[in-house]
Length: 307
Length: 267
Ligand SMILES: Nc1ncnc2c1ncn2[C@@H]1O[C@H](COP(=O)(O)OP(=O)(O)OP(=O)(O)O)[C@@H](O)[C@H]1O
Ligand SMILES: [Mg+2]
Image (cartoon, rainbow over all chains, first blue to last red; front, side, top):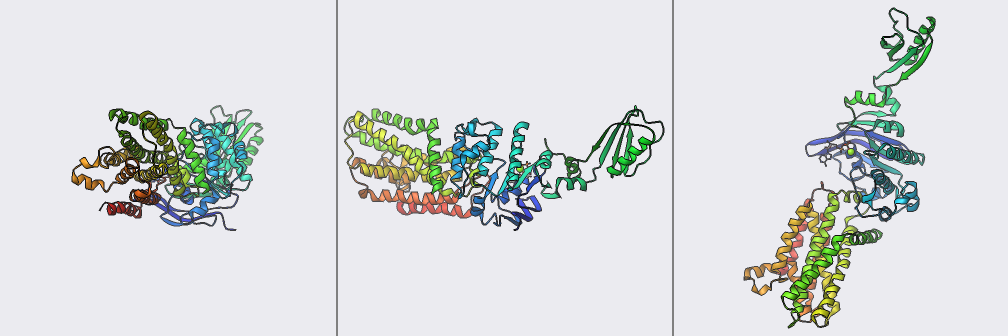
């Protein structure tokens, strides 16, 4: 079976401005895939082309075997979408919105179950305008699920929510992953990409600058691990040796803690511990700090993400 | 079909939850009704028929042009229509639901005006109530269709106001809806022949003042039908789900096409 989402050489221009400069990726069945990037990177442009919302300028795209530009109707019936910028009428009630959207699709799931699953059951008779940000977002997810879609596009599903509401959204995405639904989400939260996604593409200025599992991306960048050890007694006077792989060694003023940046943290750590042991120094604490996806991101794009 | 009924149900609910419906839909026509009736001494000498015909025409114009446009434009501006764009529905059920809702909600106002005219100003019983009902219905839908075209062309509420005023005013004053057409200069009378509202007024006057049937007023009825058909078709072509969407060139040609029947009928 071909991957449910395939994108090759995708380009998009708005007038003279090239928002996408050739994007390639695939999302495999049952995979949670994130487009991670700063403001204006082209994340929304990419997903909205795939949803059949915007025409593309060049390249090819296929979702569930449909071309999003020429087979819009068939495609839209089968996918679930959570848009970044959208609203519902102020005076529509939660349950009414779900019933309404359910009637647009060939296939639909039970509304009551969906309301319960998204913790909206108590809010089913509340006007849209009176919902909190988190509740509105949960309703948006409920609407995205009403047709029981195999492929979901979630454009910044947790942006602007408080930490609690964000965790609820994360839990739901993890559930959907267990159900083997294919999910393409966009985010500019590194932790979100790390926690939820099987694979991540880092997008910057209309290009993918790295793609792979969060771990692969971390490993590929030059960001190095840092080892920090705290000793029971001060390290004796004199120069510290050069351990295998170590690049930068620092000793605290009280000579109690050593911090080593290394390309081969495993080897460095063994040698460091051996060296301390030979001098009869016991360890009080050890820390290994791996480079984060964030370090990788900054290194790849030279930018920080907004927060 | 399923989508149409779903949208129609929601449109009705949303409209009934709007306080402005009571005001613009029902209070306004009544204010005009009493105003004109008192001013023209409608309780004497059959002027009441003239008042009723005038108030209903105004109501139909207002309901169609303002009512249809407002919500569509508001929902597009608020990024609500975008959400519908990612579902498999087309503009047609959205537009039809809006049209049917507007028509149904206007009927009580018609009933109210007729009842008050009959009980308070001694209007004679209607000779052809079914014909009147049909003419009212055709009229509301025709002006709703024009309102939908306006809504798909303009971008903001402000633009809607201006565009609707530009259509509403000439239709009110140059179609015979308020000022009798015979007192207007001949050149304006010719212009009037091109206004869809003139046909509505002619139809109403036939049914109200001369107690004719719809069949005897087939020409105005046909004009309304043509307006409904072309108007609805063109608004599906011009429909825009998002602020950023540009009107397609082919759609602009369709806009010209809607004018053609009236140019033909006027000539
Ligand atoms: N309709 C449009 N017309 C013109 N330019 C646009 C349009 N939509 C997006 N752009 C531009 O294209 C670029 C990519 O925008 P896009 O919305 O895809 O970014 P994004 O990665 O989703 O950003 P964010 O994190 O802010 O949502 C931006 O520079 C934006 O200004
Ligand atoms: Mg975006």
